[in-house]
Length: 540
Image (cartoon, rainbow, N blue to C red):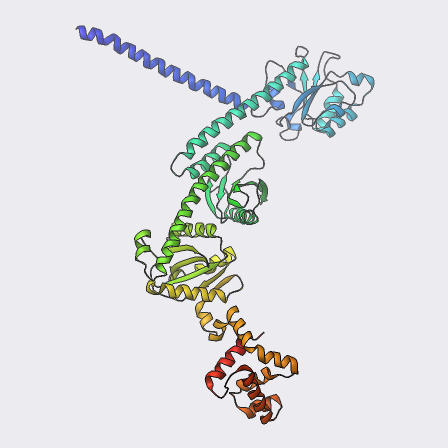
């Protein structure tokens, strides 16, 4: 019995405490809701906001249906009062003017007066009644309607200073609301950055807070993040990607505006000049200072996140460069143990010259994530080395076009012949002068002499032929030309002499003289073969 008596009050107090908590929570939520409504009302200090202030007692005289759309909803920069016949030299644009109408007693024309206000960009005219005259002149009502300027009445009990003060308070409230919004948004963005996939969460939170589409393009100009995903058409995304690629390629910094199919976007680069890491795009015409501050903080967080990601990527690229040394020893076991898997054999080895390692690696990583394309990339002194399955060889053409680079590709080989495939890719690359893919099979199909036509071989050939060319330069003869024609006719004197238009004995004499100058016994095939190689290699 005593226990029940002791427990009952405790339970009652607990229930009362919970009820108080619920009421307090409801009251708190109501205050927060009212505060949010106050902030929303302070978003734009407009003429409509002034007209809605009951304490001012203002009333719109113009018929709103006769005014231009949104005439009473335009943001007011300030409220000013003047009874001058021409106050426009002292007015700024986008303000509301208050007057008692004394200027009209001096003969000021209503049409001239209202015309000046319209040309100056005045957004509203307030007439103080019962101060100097009763009511509002009909002529003024007609001219304001004709010019599309909202005309409103300021009652006698409301001083002009009260209207100006009310508007200044609205401006201050708007500034406070925007600052509060910015602080709250930055806190939300900081929390989003701490989540898994923090960069994705941050971009999504930015889009929600701004109420616009936000996308992020990586260093290769490809769209990585998008929120909301389906709010921008594919054609516009493609055009944005092209512009992002141009910005990254040219190394441009700062915000840019771009209009695509009547939709405006603002683009901001991520990273420093020379080390741009991406572009953030927003589907918005303009940003105020608070929103721009928020976007700047996101850019900073994105840059930090990408820097950390790049550090991991650099470590991975360094590891792959070490694994490449193992593969060049025709041993793929270490690469398989470290990476877990490699492209299935037979494989193609390619070397990309002057390739941007970072963007190219990003592109391959995204390709592997989206399509499951197995590949191996590593940086080397000759360029970026790529290893991929024969089935994916067509991707090399896509890479060459996308990045505008030269690529040499090997034939189909196994991992046991990786070093040979790598050598084939380098040989093919040396034959390629323009952007595109050049396959070793094409190089091998041309001739062995073209493969020998290196700068070093040409230097040796010119050095060996120097005595012959010096003799021709001094004597005005053409022993070198005679040798070429003779060798082209299989070292047969009669057809070669006929082609040169000389006697066969003359040709034999020239051949003997050339052999003596060069130190060649041209009666033997090896000497003739070497001479032919020299002549072909040293050809201009």
